[in-house]
Image (cartoon, rainbow over all chains, first blue to last red; front, side, top):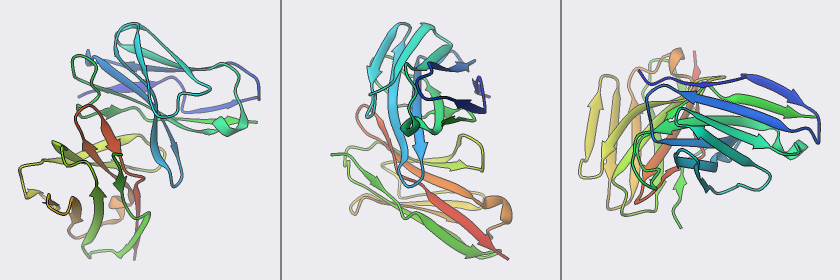
Length: 116
Length: 109
């Protein structure tokens, strides 16, 4: 079974803090994704990565950055957290080669981030 | 642009069938998916259908695809309390997967 783990289930941070969300997958998947999930808005793609050190902006990259130094690990960084970044953050991975995110995705349990 | 739409809420009585509907816009979609999200958890792939199929059945789940109308549905027979969750429809286009906003299914006793 594919396993995608996220470093924290719940996180509370203050406005202006730098926040790191970590995601690890154990299936040697090429593609990894970060989404945020908000009520009524569904999943919105923040960034994805199709290879080590490669990244692509999703639909809402503003205020976020990512890092992929190893194939199994994909980090989401909030350089200066703001209250409008309070949300559920979901990491996912999928097979695939090249710059495509089109294969079925396997999700981690999510990190609920609150910024006060 | 590409879009996937679902109603936000559905309430059914325990033991009845649930039908969750979805419409999509990308006619080049190759696969369509249903994901389930239980409270406090990530999304879990429930089932999928290839775009050249009309129907797929898997135990209590039936997926119907009307490609002409770009309409996808998920039928859950004999709905149980454990089926309470948010159900996401998603389509695989040429280069990306687009998710709907999710339908929250609640079960009445």
